[in-house]
Amino acid sequence: MFRQSGTHLRVEFHLDRSSPVPLDRQIAQTVREAVQKGQLQPGDRIVPIRLLAKHLNVARATVDSAFSILIAEGYLETSRGRGSFISTKLPLQENFDALRLEPKTDEPPKPKQVGRHAVFCAQALDDLSVQPSTPLAIACTSREASPGKDFTDFFARNVQHHSLKLIYSNPQGMPELREAVCGIAERLRGVKASPEQVVITTGSQLGILMSLKILFSPGDKIWIEDPHYPLLRAAAATQDVCPVYVPVDKEGFNLQTALQFEPDARGVFLTPSHQCPLGMMMSIQRRREILQWASASGGWIIEDDYDSELRYGGNLAYPSLQGMDAGHNVVYIGTFSKSLFPGLRLGYMVVPPELVKAFSGMRFLIDRQSNEILQMTVADYIRQGLYEAHLLKMRRVFEARRDYLISVVQENFGDWGHFMATGQGMHMTFVFHNPQLDDEAVAFECRNQGVELRSISSFYHGKPVVRGLVMGFGHFPPAQLLAAVSRIGFVLRDKFAAFAPEK
Ligand SMILES: Cc1ncc(COP(=O)(O)O)c(C=O)c1O
Image (tube, rainbow, N blue to C red; front, side):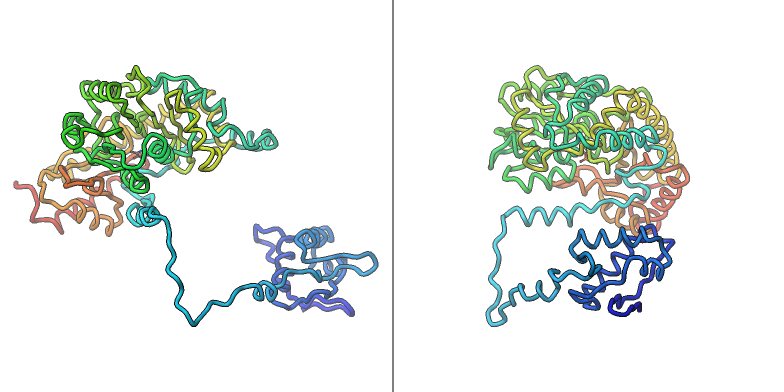
């Protein structure tokens, strides 16, 4: 309690000098709370700065700064000759309370109508929990895979030097990043486009959602690979399109099967370079077929090329479908979530010239534009050649981890199944030999043992054709991979012995 004749500060201050919150903010917060609790009333005079500074054993400038904050917020007023006092125009809690309508207790509340998509959006959150960053999660990050000091230096420099220039800008994205993206997409993925065709996004997810909105009308049928990326399924459910799920085989998506399921589809979502989650590449023959279909029917191909920058052992991916297409039938979606880190929330699309305006307009309506500091930072990082150097480093680290994971799985429970395509990306799928083995139950038991696993079944809409486990390996050092694999082996032998391979 601190009083002084004629002036009041009926408040106890507990300043924490070790806190990262500066002392002036702590003083201001204490006065604010005292006003809110009614300990200080409008019109109360406050002890002079000099005395309060002495009492609190802080510099006068500190109290001066605290008072300035409180004046700016409307808590304090000053008047020459009268000193400082609690504002008489303060929006007090009682005043707010008086404005609030009382709920009617005599009639039941009316049921509220919401749009039909609300339920799908809420459902998506339940269905698609974010994986914790523990082995063997897929989308996470690690120190070895961090873009490092160069990246943070660019970021800091851009904040320092350009923040005054950073205003609302072109929703399509900053020209320097679009140009840089065009370069890497061409060099790494054979994409053929000009920077004018690039639209910067906050990641593939936005690209998927915008494609659903821009390319299709309610009721349009679209083919979706089965299995597929679960966020695509959830996004499609929030639009009024009709997804038709088409089982993939070892060559990926098959147009002939798709046509049998639905001959009048208006478009197709594909992961042709690294089928999600099974991992195979769509064969050249199948690629030609789907491109010819698009050209002949006017259908759209949406190419989700989420991790093709990460290829191992000289495994050459085919060029992107976009790069093979002669007729602007492909909307290409790329992301920095795998090659840099998912929390960056930066990705890109390459769209046919006639759709640039529509995609940019949609981008504008959704959230105006992507973060400019990040756009400039990634543009700098690419233009200095550091992005491609970073990819080389990641490929080396990830390849060694991939090899290690394969070898320890082989030793531990290799006879239970086999890995599918292992040439790229940050995850691999281990397919069980015994199709009766419930992969969801195995994944569940493993998660209980602290191993973050997804079942292959959870990526299917229809009846799973193969069952097994989806293992992320990129961000975990060998010791952690080994511990996780040992636990999976233990779970299989302990809980699923009935499905064990015959010796
Ligand atoms: C098939 C597929 N597409 C895209 C992404 C990346 O999404 P985003 O760029 O929104 O982080 C992932 C991430 O796991 C994925 O598996």
